Image (tube, rainbow over all chains, first blue to last red; front, top):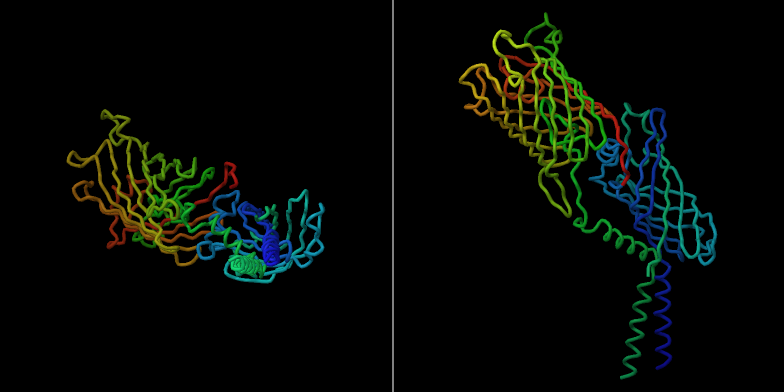
Length: 183
Length: 306
């Protein structure tokens, strides 16, 4: 009887342990930057949702297109209305894995370069994306950063000829998240 | 009994550890949970409808749109002469009246503007206040309601300078409510009940206050082009002699920071009191004016990033 009890406790502890590997954020940061001959366009989003499983390396993001904010109001309107069609495609998601998660020791402070691959879905199109990034562990806090490029044509975001000198073909995406542990 | 308890514990433990299995699924579950918390069931945040119209003017009159806070909108509008003037006047292109104007967004719901029209050398000023904003989510509102009062000053010399003329005779006022709704991504319709007041009328039996009801709308035919229509019906008992209702048809073409509006209208004026109460052109006779509005916006004030 006692044995069964101990086994049960161990099992429960183990499953809690598995849950404890999950880290999340609701206010991660994603920005994009388009550098073109006529103008540079920048937008920021501070309401990025992300989940990281430090055991398996699973990494997922979800972001509302409407939460990207621009300096110019009209740009924001056109971004939503003409380019990203945010009423039709309200969010962008990423579902991927940190390939070399085993190299990161989450109980030791440090910067760990990692590579991530997965599916990026936006504007109704899903494409494989590979990116390099950094996982930082600092006194138990985990944060992650990455910079990569996305080609607009890959996601069927069409640029009219008239403004082709205003918008870059590939935009630079910056991601930065500080994660909290899921209890 | 104790054995039973033991088995129960074991069953619970197995169930819990099974839930822990399949980590990718776990991650997905947690993310959807976060989405639920943040985006919610569409009731935790108010989602305001944007881009009901491409710009703050439909053709001659206002739309429910405001310019954004800290944005300056430079508007240059032309109405050429009558199309039925024929080739000699190049179908009206030889004669043009124009209005130059500046609009500025003080807050996201309040804008001000002023302008000068060559037509009767008129200065005009207005503000537009969005009282209600169409929205879904936490706060649901089916329509946008705006109030636009205008004042116009006719600076043209008095016809009879020997008569005793009052400054107040140069003034015109209008009050307009705009009730608009974006029905779908491409279709927006608005109603514009309007009162126009003039201090001086030509004939003693003419009313000083004119009542009109406008209806207008747009249908997008592509992401950047829409077809617009605008009609103002004047109350038959409250209108000036020899005037007719204003009917205008046009296109909006949007390119980056510009909006080009091309249209055909039977009104020559571009201020409320002129196109609503002083339209004399008849569509059936071809008394039509070709015209365009060009809008160019500049971001003047720094915008707070959200």
